[in-house]
Amino acid sequence: MASDEAPKPAADRIRVVGKWVGALEVDLGAWTAPMLRAEVARRVGGGVEPERVGLIFGGRVLKDDPPASLLEAGLKANAKVLSSLASPDRAKEIAAEAAKAKAEEEHAARLVRLWDAAKAMSQRHTDGSFLEDEDYNLDLEDQSGQKVMFGSVDDMKALKMALMLHQKGKTQMKKKKYKEALDVLIMAEEAFSLCDSKLIQKVDNMPMLQLDIVWCYFVLRDVSCLEVAGTRLEKARVGFERSHGKDSSRFRVLQAGRQADLAIYVRLELLEGVVAYHNGHTEKARESLTSAQAKYLQLQVPDEAISMLMDMGYEARSAKRALKMTGYDIQSSVDLLCEEREKKIRRQEEDRERQREILEQMRYGKTPMNKAVDLQKLKDLTNIGFEKYLAAEALRINENDAEKALDLLTNPEENCILQNKIQARRSRATRGSSSSRAAAARTARAINNRQAFVSAPPHAVDGNAPPHAANGNPQEGNQADGNLPEGNDVDSKPPEGNDVDSKPPEGNDVDGNPPEGNNVDDNPQEGNQDVVMTDEVAVNDEDTNSIPVPARDVSMESELADELTGDALDDYDIEVSDEGQAIAEYMSLLESVASS
Image (cartoon, rainbow, N blue to C red; front, side):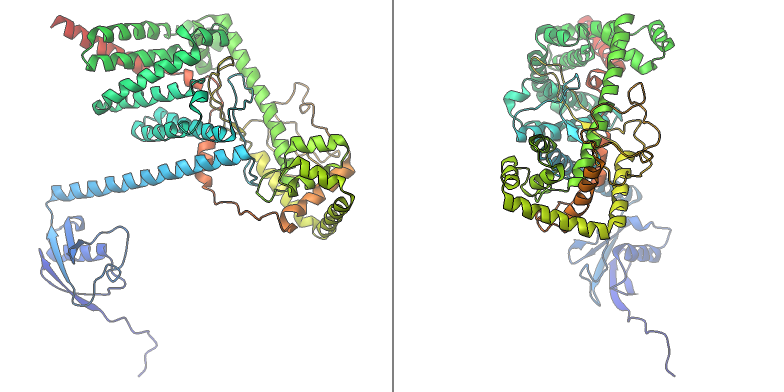
């Protein structure tokens, strides 16, 4: 009688020799090395763990990773496999070595992802590449929060990349992952090397990086790096003196007499003393460690002073930092805290303005090179008298070339063709307005729900306030209900009852109104034209996507952006308790050497 069941595949026989001898019937296409290892362990008996069994075929060890069938590993019917049995301790060693090798491979792959993500972000946020789903912006700022231009475009890209990698390394240092941090810091150093060396010499980011690298050497107790540690510390010392001035004179002026860099010199002089001690220069070691100890004692803030500031409403961490940087002076500490609060409010206002700009750029669509419309050039054209939506489209199709856009707009024939094109889009948009506006509303909601405008500034520039790394954390007060005012331009007044959020966002002006300067265009009719025009730009224009958008590592990019602090004084705010213990340890060693 015929059977309804599908016939089972014929089993293949293989021969096993060595620790266990016998024949096994297996399905070469389905069985894997772990399955064969487990079966041999079972046949050996005595509760042998499969991890202790070794399998060799054709002079090659059958490995579990990558997983593959025996057939893919080259085994055929009647194949001979040699089995061996490792001792329990050796099996554990093999397993540990395999786990270590796998961890190192994953770490190397992660470093590649990290480098590629930082490179892609710095590229986009320097050349203006347009991404609809990216709701933050990377800018370089000085320590006062002012945006700065730094050399050429390539210098800007390299510096942004280096700052992101440096911040990532510092984050891992705070998590006590010093080995992983060291690898990332070395990558940051490589990124810094891509900048013009004359420009890098004017800022203290590079000496800060050198100091962080040597601190990782010290914590890891890597004696093999002793010589290179000394060289790095020399570079850090020269770099700090160049950017901060001799005895930090320039830095003190820029910081209104505050000693924000004191903790940096505690770490620097401690490490200089450690290197000198291990090189046999005891007197130099004693001099460096004594100076580091004196500075360390200056950073021990009295609890009473912290309590006084906490009673005024300040958080303990902020109060302690302000007191350390002002030499325990209460009034100076309050002034510093007020300045930091004002900077935060100003940043929030700037972030909201930048958010509006991003929304507006998204509505105009992207250029053939996937870049956003340049709003400054758009403003220049509208000031001449051209309609906004027309000028935006002229810039878009001409890759933000203002001269070509102006030639197009002033040429009656080409201007007429452009208007006809836009009018055709509006007609198509009218037929599909519901879906288009729903998509626009979703886009607005995504941006408002995660406002993470990132600024990644350098440190002290000659003659300017020292810049610093920047914030990628979402700002308060930008939660939207996701509803975009229908037919309303970003810079126009929304109709009553259709605000993006019915409640004013936190962090607005004292009177609850949004910052001034939003209502550049108050004509709702023209705002409607802009929206309709741009709903169709990215979809229907044949030259829009001539350059494909490269694939993104969204999770890694978000990780990098979210770890930027936005705190101009973060690098100088070092908790020096570990440094204090190290100073005491090496001072004790010096005393031992002196007594002997």
